[in-house]
Amino acid sequence: MNLAKNLELSSFYFPERLAIREDSKEWTYSYLNERANRIATGLMKLDVKPGELVALCAMNSADWIAFYFGVLKTGAVAVTLSGLLTGDELTNLVKHSRPRIIFTDKGKLQELNKLKDDGIVEKVICEGGDLDLDRLIDMGEPTFEAIDRERRDVAAILYTGGTTGVPKGVMLTHEGILFSSCSIAYYERSTEKDVALCFLPFNHVFGQIHIMNSTILTAGCLELLPSFDMDRVLSILKEGRITKFFSVPTVYIRLLNLPDLKKILGPLRYCFSAGAAMAMEIVKQWKERTGITIAESYGMTEAMPITFNHYYPERHVVGTVGQPVLGMEVQIRDTSGNILEQGHEGEVCVRGPSVMNGYLNNPEGTEAAFWKGGWVRSGDIGVYDKNGYLSIVDRLKDLIITGGENVYPREVEEALYTYPSVEECAVIGLPDKEWGERVVAFIKPKAGESIDKDKLKAFLKTRLSPFKVPKEYNVVNELPKSQAGKILKREIKRQQLEKSK
Image (cartoon, rainbow, N blue to C red):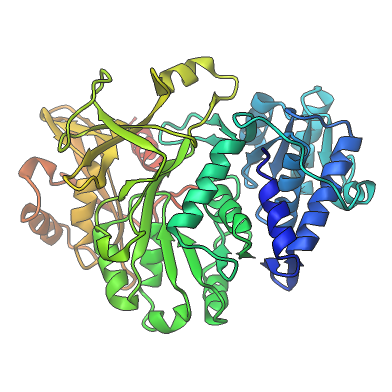
């Protein structure tokens, strides 16, 4: 087994079909596969062997995809790092993973050359590096078949900071990513005729597996952007060839501000949101404006997807993440690991083919992530309804305890999103002498609108129990976000704690 065989099969069945469109660049499947072959055989001439680590630290591009599959074809492991990394963030992750070779851009040469001098990295592939990508490709051969690996051999390592802010190298297997790609293609009814717009970063599980790998599996076309750019996204949508749109809640909220939204979307048949919880109000507004349901699933870097909520659109349940994916097991457990009955809130725990092998060079973290029997702990609080639909209540670590009462920030945020002037919001708990923690809201108003805090508080009192109503309201121009578009509550909290010192 080798995940790269997906590319080889798509190239065999649809050699002349477009695999990638990036600005004016158009690559067919046969060309992409040949380029990956040349990279693979070039790397093997550099003595790269199965199981060794080779890193990618660059923005989304056609070359990124070719290099990724080239690494996989050799049987090596692709360590995918954010193209935005610089300074200590970059050096710390490279020191942790210690890849033999790294594909990157020339802007990172100074830091990487220091690591090379220290013996941590052997070669840097970029303009001005030990060799550039074109030279590596010239070294290689146009034909090559991916080297077979065992099912549970690691294919890729993705770093996640999660909500804790502590990065972990998640070891995902050939079997796991293949299972994820097949599941996604099945639930999305993907075909070779689909054109998927991708601006989510490939170092993230959403971009790399959900969008890129599943599209390559089904021989669809990837329309690439290096990152999110509203003007370019709208321009591409208006050209009328995109059938699948993948994004995060923030982008859907911005698109809802456009008066001619349905016309802009053209032949779009499928919309999907992940990376952060989608407010029910946004899903309802999108459906009313476009006629398209925003599909959601639930997953995490350590295991994805876990659930899907839209295989039968008429059975889509707003506010839930759907039912477990075929082949995945999901249990709700208490903090001691005891299984809870339907209707009881607890930690979501999962087992199945897509579950990670563990964290790279982190046996303690790996042990803490699992219950016995291969059940990985999500850190999310969830609850099942009578039809087996899972609702994610909140992050376990985000729970606010105020005056002895439990407050889940997501519930408060859902109420805030129903207020007409609110575009985005985040709710956190901050230390309080009287209450232990106080509920604090951070709100970005819609363009041209203002927030009357007293009116907002009165509005929330009609929808929430008194102890859940925020005691403090902060109106902001922007909320800090990750590269994948997730609002960073830990950063908001850090900033507020710094101010209070």
